[in-house]
Length: 135
Image (tube, rainbow, N blue to C red):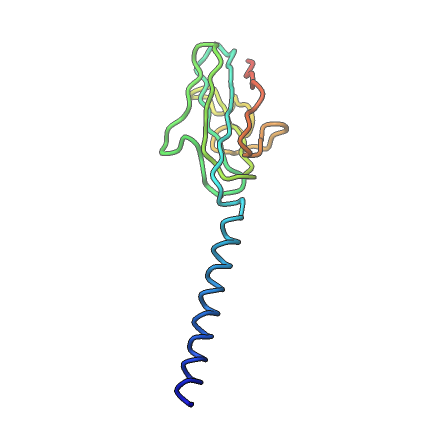
């Protein structure tokens, strides 16, 4: 009888642990912050000089697109579409500047240094309006 009681308790503990793992996994899968999304950015530079662009997460500290010390280049007056993979609900802002002139900028500028109005979008699988960078 004692053996059955201890096995029953062990089985109960095992089932409780298994149930808690299942619940954690199930509810963890519903968390939007980990879900990958895309956000399409569309830019056109009307500046006569080359303009560099980076996209900065305001939600994940230090996360930048394209990253690895690279930039998106606008150099021919045409519309450029940039597709990024981001987290659902993540706030992303653009920074653009005239190459080699960090004081001439749009959005948050070079290295996310400045504040801005209307230069951020939420990652939700959508797209931005065409962002025209005028001299």
